[in-house]
Amino acid sequence: MMYGWVFMGMALHFGYGLARPTWANARGQLLGFLAYDSVLIVPFLQHFASVRPEHLLRLVVATGIVIFSGAIALYYLGIQPATRIWQPEPPLLPADG
Image 1 (cartoon, one colour):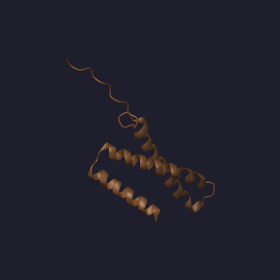
Image 2: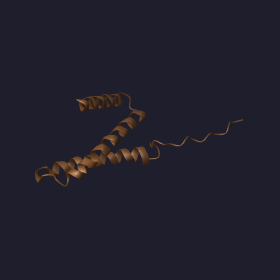
Image 3: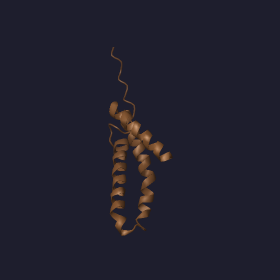
Image 4: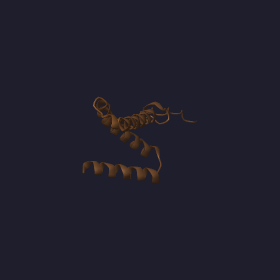
């Protein structure tokens, strides 16, 4: 039931982001993806040791999606200068006068 509420909250957040497309809304969604991906990646990778052959393709696809979405979030939140979270303050311009 808790997962259902989490997914409902995420769906509302995505809907709000579609209605008001700003970087602040996208940043929250990317942070959510990154948190979700970082929780899932370890169990997915550990499961490769015991996966049945008929489920291997599904595990590879799911793991690939988690890695891809985590990489996108890491890129835009940490590497891309225009969107990274720890943007330095713009320099103060001298007063005209």
